[in-house]
Image (cartoon, rainbow, N blue to C red; front, side):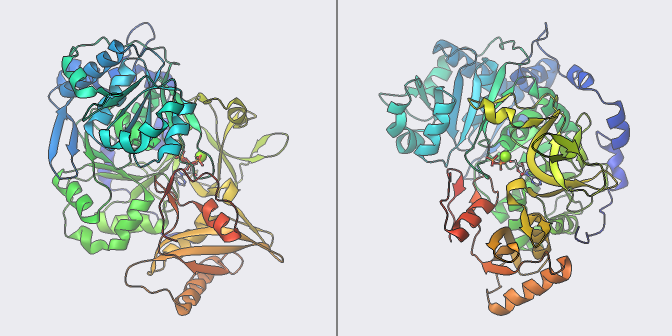
Length: 582
Ligand code: ATP
Ligand code: MG
């Protein structure tokens, strides 16, 4: 392992964290206790939307702001818990009236507008299944995802309908209703009019814990996206991990920057904050350095959940931009979705006076599995430790089985013992693929990692991205992090390129910070820097400069695409690719 930056100590005020002591809580934890914190609907029934909204209103918190929406224009609209209750009740009534029943799939194709959140929770309330689609998808990815989930209805806008849905509608015979939030055409339904006519009360559908609630498509980083099934019981994990991994307290102003088109944007952009009675900030606009800092400051955000790509863009803009603002209310910052380079943790600590807390999970796990906690010192570059109730291991997978590797720093596949509430219940229509995820009592994540002697987990790379060079196994993350430490570097993606002598050689694609020019000299300097940090066997042998790296729309570097392009191979499924300049 690369020589790591020093441990970031948590301030003594962390005693006020929901989990003051990791080991103690882990030892005493049971999922039954976590289940008892959910109010449920009697007879073993429950509903995510009840936990997110109705129970808070019943407990007298109806006047608290649940959702503060910042429109692209900057205009602010507040929805209290009582407002959300009324709106989601109306939406659920609309679904009922249109004959959309329990278990049917209701999709959304919307930007981050209030209707998206109302549709999500209203759908779940009515016992139907919610499936969010990212609004920037083109018609093809929309069609394939709606086919896989047999969409009965979709909520969208007139503009998105015309541009992306109208043309594929004939291929979707099961799609009965297209609800438009802002208009009506001959072949669509005007949602606003129906909502207004619908009653404001609704008896939330009592669901079996194992009933399907959400259908989520994976990010497509490694291949064709999979449709992941989550059930109502997942709310037990959303609620618990919101408290423990994000340290959410009732009344906290909370900002999750992820779009609900990805699992982070629903598990932690809708469900966990609401079940924990936070006030959520929703910004309709895309990333912008100044807008983000102003939002953090003006809204007095206390808990902030974002992603490495965004953090790297903030770093690229320089600390001065942050230091022009004050964030006295900010208490906890977390990151997910990609490996968080140690450099970013150190930068966070210098710039905000607290580290970014990296955590790890997947669409399949439904909720955070490994995390850095408010009360636990942070080793920059580590994903932290497994949540209470989660058993994680490093395993060696062979043809015959999976064997746990217990020696510190052994590298293997990151695996989890199944049984937590938000675990996926299926890859929709892909039973064989689902079955392949399990071996010898482990769920295999497809990621490679190590565990150190203190029990901290370290991400190495996707198992497909591992580089085998001259007898060494090299994880791209380690190389990327070393290059990130160089002042000129804004972003890096590392791949293995076939080579006759070494098997593979390490190649790095580098995007530079403003004010730095690509040159042969800089290339040599970066190689020298990497060799010093990593040693000659691991340091990149080739470096190429790029203005931007190919990324998924959820912000993950697509190393498989760097590789396909390098080798002149087909690009495969690129439905989630954000347009990139090559
Ligand atoms: P697909 O499965 O379609 O290829 P994906 O795996 O990127 O796409 P997601 O479920 O959105 O889809 O992402 C989960 C993956 O993201 C993890 O398996 C891991 O590779 C990566 N990831 C998430 N959090 C972290 C983290 N903190 N550190 C390193 N990697 C992370
Ligand atoms: Mg995946």
